[in-house]
Length: 166
Image 1 (cartoon, rainbow, N blue to C red):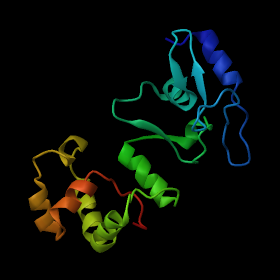
Image 2: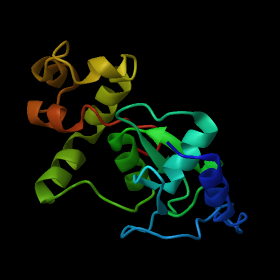
Image 3: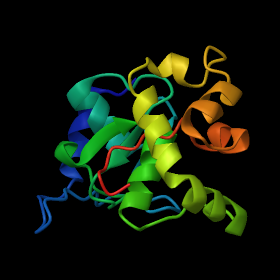
């Protein structure tokens, strides 16, 4: 539980918006650059998550609070959004910050099957999240439908593509 006095202290350690609109946490940062604070209940929390919950309520299980601005200490609610780990990875890739291709083989799979992977993911957007990785859609059937190898389906079917450049 976070007490009112703790909330006031947290808010007092967030700087006014800078030229990019980021409201940066001025307190302690963790090893990855995110604002972090230990509260009276002895739990350490990342501040951008605390700010999200103060403004929007609880974070649903399985979702992350991601930064549109790619600035870890930023706490501006307008710069934060909820997403899955796959959403966060795709956001990083779209901005050129990270490649999820661990080795040349994964990059090769992507390059050779990009059109089919994107078509598959756009088709799967029509289904609830809970059904996307379920056995309702066997990888072999999906692979046949989009003309891509089965192992590529299992690697890429849970990734959401939200940008036209993909």
